[in-house]
Length: 193
Image (cartoon, rainbow, N blue to C red; front, side, top):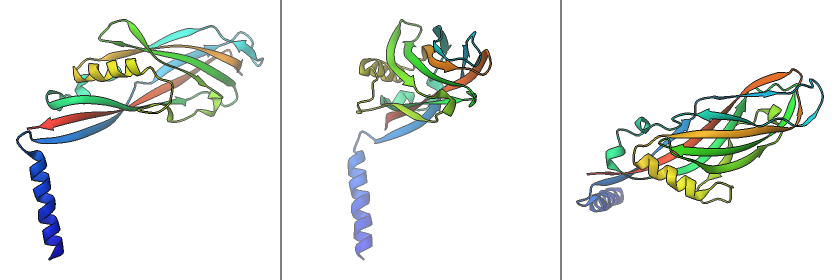
């Protein structure tokens, strides 16, 4: 008998919460970027190099509006919950630390600084390392994150620019290619009428 009253009370609270405005819901997605191929080279095979020359790589249309297109008309806001990176394919017989400066461009505008990071021991091929989490002390530019959230709400795409160089690099071959993958965990707050 008690469970019937509890169920009735829960349904009443739910219906009262819906009111005339409808139902509010959070829809989350974890979105991987395309693999970003990084090439690292040194003229001194087998010898440690203090620093490699800087290189720049781009990832286009990182999060496209069609990821949330069915909810875009009803979205009230977007939240970037966290951003991670993974390294794949760096040879374990070589070693390096990588320094990265990551910027984003919304709808082809100027690039805005998102974050800087150092990846120690790239040869360990780290997986899903947190580089931004909403409300944490991880070093991301909150203003840029806020602009990303607004861009997603407006159905705009964004590109990434990654400037990087290696430090304390020892390669067992002259050129090494590996992949860098970013993941964005996004939540859309949706109001269904």
